[in-house]
Image 1: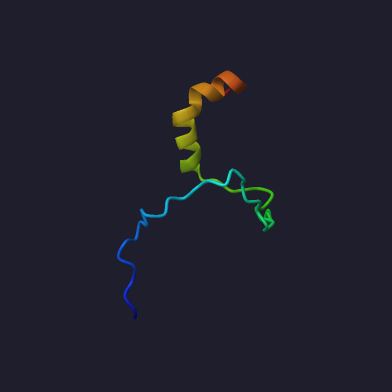
Image 2: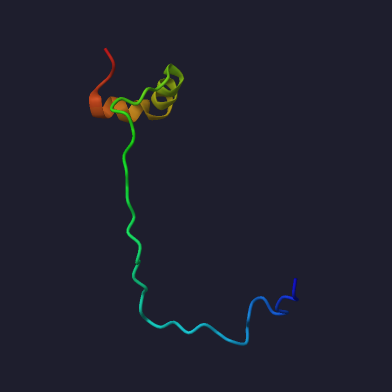
Length: 64
């Protein structure tokens, strides 16, 4: 392997902004592979109720 540069930060050549943003050339494909119903455990429900119980009561009313 050859010797690397001695100045990794290259302070001698400051970067000058061009004022133009590069356009993304690549298109991103988004796929949705979640099932129709996402199962949750009773433990997860208890955590949500513990932290957001007051907010949920305001939105939907108290549990019967």
